[in-house]
Amino acid sequence: MKRKLLIGLFLLTLQGFSQSNETIEWINNNSILIEDSDPDTELSSFHKQAPEKFVNARIYGFGELSHDGKEYFNLKAKYFKYLVVNHNVTTFMIEDSFKAEESINLWINNKSDDFNIVYHAFTTGFWYSTEIYDLLNWIREYNLTHEKNQRIKFYTFDTQSSQNLDKYTLELIDAYEIPVEKSLVENFKACQKKEITMTATPNWADSKVPQLELLKTKINDFFESTHMDSIPQLKEVNREINVLINYTEFVQNPTNAVRDLQMYENAQWILENEIPNEKAFIWAHNEHINKRGMFSYNSGIKNLGSFLKDTYKDGYYSVGFDFGIGKLKGNDPKHKLNNGWRIYNIEKPYKKTYSETLFKAEKDIFFLDMSRAKTTEPNSFFSSANQTLSIGGGGFKPKPLYRIKMSKVYTDDYDALIFIKEISPADNLIKIE
Image 1: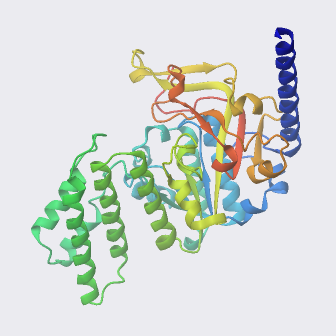
Image 2: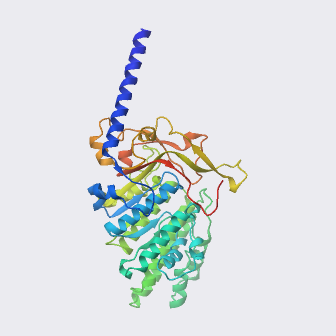
Image 3: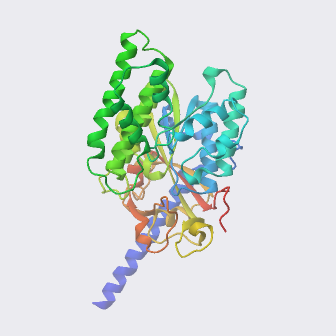
């Protein structure tokens, strides 16, 4: 009996090994080479083999497995430039809050030469990297040589900061002497000044949001009654109040589900009101841009990407990232330098992950069409639940690993996957040793 059991286990091992080799061979034959991660070189192989759905999409969501990584940032910049030049993408949207928009748009449209306005623009610390600043400078140079209606526009869609959300509304009320109750203005100011504590603030939005809605209605009614409802500032005021409403709701209920719904509402508003006939590129984490939902495949938490896919169908194209080995930043409270940030070295892919198999492919960096994987890969490798890492705002945390190791189904999550064999830290302006 023991002999038969050992033989059975041996045969199963052989079968698994054979299937793994078949999958690796399929990856070698069906992946599209990305020649390098240099943001300024051509996507030569990809240009010749780009999937039809990629070419025909309107909204491109490009993720990252962690909010850091030179290769993630540079490859996303590379694809953004490619899409601008070859597929008429005009808009860059990033996972950050409203504060960043005005100063960065001044910079990329050459209306200011003061680099400090960009240096302090972001509310997300990971974006303070030379890779992202190099991309902003590329956009600036691009806009300098193009007419106003052809220039790249910059937007944010996150709701984790209320900075600058008092810029347009109060100025407009004062400039036109709009007759609104003092209590509505005070409510607006209170919502803008309220800080997120990451714990629920019961009834905050329930009491504050109706007053914000009333303020918005009174402002719009004033301009409609005076036949001035087409003034440019009115659109900015409506968006500012809408974003503040979202922020106020997030203060009351600071959950991933609420945040991603608001991300979607903000992104959709931009797509429908600011660029209704234009194409956009969305830069965010894998967990936001994937088309299925947050965290493990059975979490049930809808995210930005799943809302966009529901609304725009094939018009939304989701590209996720995975990696094999390399160096990652993580926050360790026991580490005394750099506010706890340190570098971890991953010397081999984790066992029983998608990465463990992908790492064995021939190419160092490659693009995989998940619709092709779903229909032609012989072992349903990408259509079966498997483990992957998902590294959030705190960076890489090796212990306990289960907190960042999640079960996914890549064909359900993404329209395409970019795999990088080896990653390295982004060149942050604040050095981490």
